[in-house]
Amino acid sequence: MQIMNFSKEEVRKKLEKVFEKRQANVLAEVITDAYTELVKAKDFNELKQVVKELAEAQKRTELRVEELAAAQERTEISLNRLIGRVDLVEDRLEGISNSVGYSLEDKSYKSLPDLLKKEDIVMEGNMIRRYYRIGNKDQQINIFAKGRRNGKEILILGEVKVRPSKKEIDRFLKIAEQVRREEGNPETYLLFVANDYHPNTEQYLEEKGIRYFWSYEF
Image (tube, rainbow, N blue to C red; front, side, top):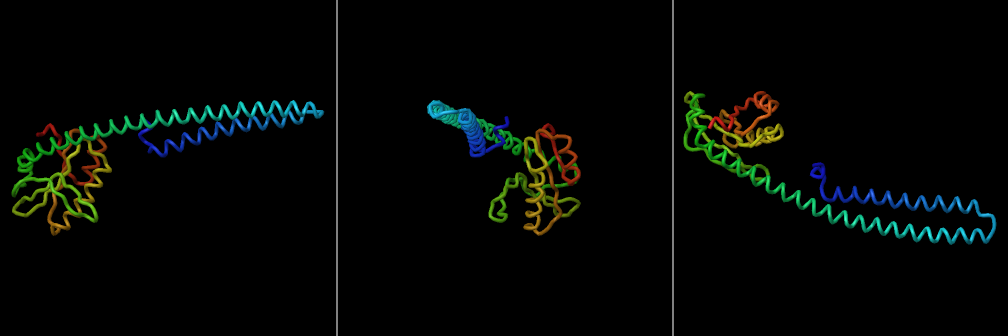
């Protein structure tokens, strides 16, 4: 739905330009007609008739402009209602996505320790959600844990998404790097958990050296 790509103000400005253009076209037609009739006028009586006709044309133009303004107002009302519905749908979708995401996180905490054992990683303590103060914002790490691999301490950081994008991966990498520094620059194991991965996303995760798990593995 294209309307979701514009803010309310942007859509309103586009509508205003459309109506301004229509009004300008109407006035241009009147001016053109007036000029034509004046050129044709040969005597004073004929000129008076032309002026009278122009006055009537002006009234019709004003009426048309008023009709356009009324139409614009009705359009704005309909547009606001539509945007309100779109906002409501977006809120509901976000709520559903968050619900699915938290459910997947909870499953991850239970299943990942056993999956990581296959990669010689032994957990120390539990996996948790954790917030880090980075700059002026509190950033959440969906999966935060510590463990050991071959006797060496390892920091485990992960992100849980329904269907991750490259943008979300880049954001996670940035946060993970900042958290790693805060933790004293230990060896770090990065992972993603998701319900679905686009093939391009899988390739991108591999290029970035991020281990990823599918929800059905739990």
